[in-house]
Amino acid sequence: MDEKHDFVEVDPNIPEEGPSAPPPGWLDNIAGYEGSNPGGTPDGNYHPPPPPYSPPDSDQNARVLNVREPTVSEDVAREALLQFVEKKWTYSSKPAKNLVFKDLKPITVYRYRLETYTEARSSSWESEPFTGQQVDGPENGMSPAPWEVPVQYPQKFTDMCIKVRVPHSCSVKGCYGCQCTGSVRCGRCHSRGRVRCMHCHGSGHTRTGKDRRRCISCHGRGMKRCIQCHGRGFKTCSTCNGYRNIMHFIQLTITWKNQVLEFIPDKTPEFPLKKFAKVSGDGFFEDENLLVYPIVGFPDQDICDMSKKGIEEHVSKFSPVSRILQQRQTIELVPLTHAFYSYHGKDYDYYVYGRENQVYIPKYPTACSIL
Ligand SMILES: [Zn+2]
Ligand SMILES: [Zn+2]
Ligand SMILES: [Zn+2]
Image (cartoon, rainbow, N blue to C red; front, side, top):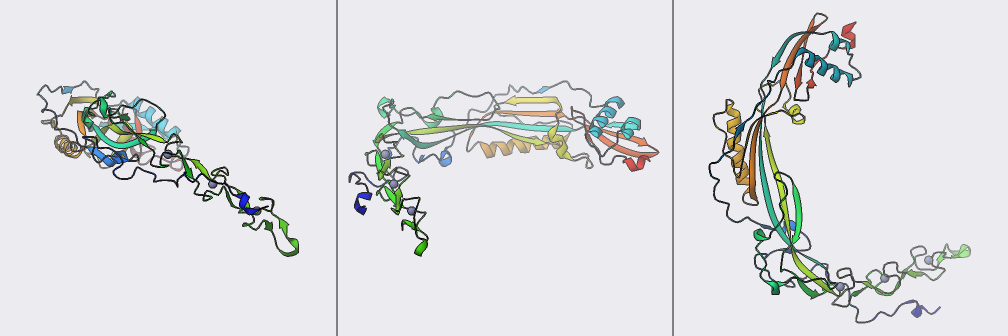
């Protein structure tokens, strides 16, 4: 077969594949969105929020809530221990059933939590093939500034991220990827439609000498049809999907995040603080406002100090890059009881903690010590 006929003739007007992103200067300037990156890097252009709202008026809604006494009865303490022991196959339930309580000592544990609900806005240039869809361009008016683009707000203190198209920022341009032809030359086969057979390395034969055989993969031709362009030598432009034109627009990414700080003063060194992370407590104090004030006069000074420090930190950290929509600070009373008991003449102890009556036990009488 004449080698020449093995290759396809590609229309000379079909260009090489263009850049993967619009070249510099390609996109129009939209006031307020200068510096937006093309190609979907939403963090590329963070828009600092406009000056903060006027400081909150003094209608603080701090509330002291009713809480239960953080004590457990002997029955509750024993039941909690039994449930705990059941889950540990190496532990016998005998000691838990037969132990004799000596003391149940309630310990006051406060958990302070500060939540700062923030909104951040960033923008980037995005594009999609132009298929005749509506184009909301500058002829419809000025694009609203990043912080003036209207959006539907989620429920307070819930994390969410949405992307919206900035009004009047759309424009249609010829595709930079294919010079408006809708097709690009195939780079894999250099627009020949065929590539060298990998099986026989282009020789058309496998093995050598007497054993020489025709390559079954390419039927002895040494070349195979290019799978990328299906033998055409060119392919549909991936930037415009063959539509030849692209609609560019500015996409605003809006992120709502609840920033949480938690703090428990460490008053019981023998009890690991991190255990509290998994249990709930009783709401004791709640204060919600646009910006909250540091707690003053609370019996535990560590809580007051952390409130002051935490609020300062949150405001200085989050207000330059996001808008603080709401703050909430709460104090919870987390139940913690130190249980002392004796079993077979020996003294032991454990802790019952959280509303869920979880158990922390540093040392449990073993099966051996029973015998
Ligand atoms: Zn072959
Ligand atoms: Zn190809
Ligand atoms: Zn194109």
